[in-house]
Length: 312
Image (cartoon, rainbow, N blue to C red; front, side, top):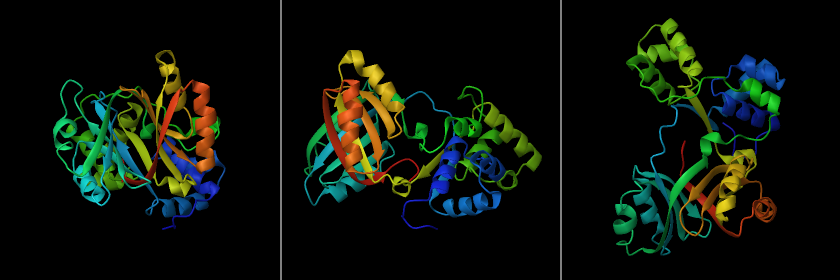
């Protein structure tokens, strides 16, 4: 296992390859990236030993609805409030501010109903001094779309699995068992999956190929951004004129620093989650990249600790 130091360039390129295809073979990765197969095998073994996690995911179902929360908490009470929220299944992610007195979170919610957490439980908590809630109207991109910007377009295209449009069609018991097994480790070889699901290896290999071709087996690669040299984690809320909102959201979704872009209700109608190298890059992102999109107002939440995130 490596330390929390920034990884070398070849390691970063291998991580980017895993983002394109979590089950990419050593031979394929080496050929596309121009690396020695033995070196790729060694580097991947180290990366997958606690630095990088690759899991299988199913195609996205219809967006269930979510509310973004900003919760200000009395100093000395934030640990208790954080623990209570993290334990909830409907809390998708939770960040603590760098200042240590505010929580940023996303909670699954039905836009047609009053959310009990927002309207009753949090206001009744004496440790909570302020709550700000905005409903997500549209998702431009999320963490599963983010790609480390270290590959050429040709390399990324050569490594990306070509499949049919992702579908959420029902799976039979064998396919479902395969996906459940790979949800823990998407790089398990077919033989190991076959042993787990108790079906012949030939059947599992055939099913895996079909699931990938049909777009029903997707992979996601998780890595601490500090290992990538990205030490600034920030949630940025913005106000954009309605006529410019869609263009701004789509542009941000393609930005290499953005791992989430959402349109929301409220006075701040656009939200972006970003990973950047340092505060100078954050400054340039706000004053240059956002300024070009016609953003009229910006508020930046510096993340001190990412307590609950997908893959953690």
